[in-house]
Image (cartoon, rainbow, N blue to C red):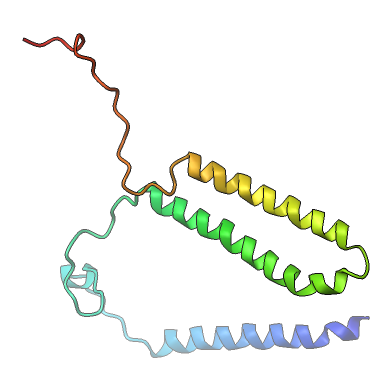
Length: 140
């Protein structure tokens, strides 16, 4: 059984030696300047000067969109192979496989409804403010 792992072990050894060799070679050959000037500390992105500061807060909406992508991507990643092999299952236990997939789709529908309820898909929505009534709020 251990002879089955010899190719994996050899590949791992070659990868470690290759990586170590490249790092060692770059450490020997590379020239580094000892002085740290303001120009060297400045960000450089493709020759274009920076228009804004680099560290900005990213709105949570972007993360929510990433989660939507993950949910929908997982759905497609599981539905496509299932749809291809479902034809083979028709002769055997088609009902069991169908109900399993229906349960999976229902679970994803709950995730989609939850995201919809939380407002993930409403990009133009602003923060909710309480509505002032005419008799409240004081004023002249």
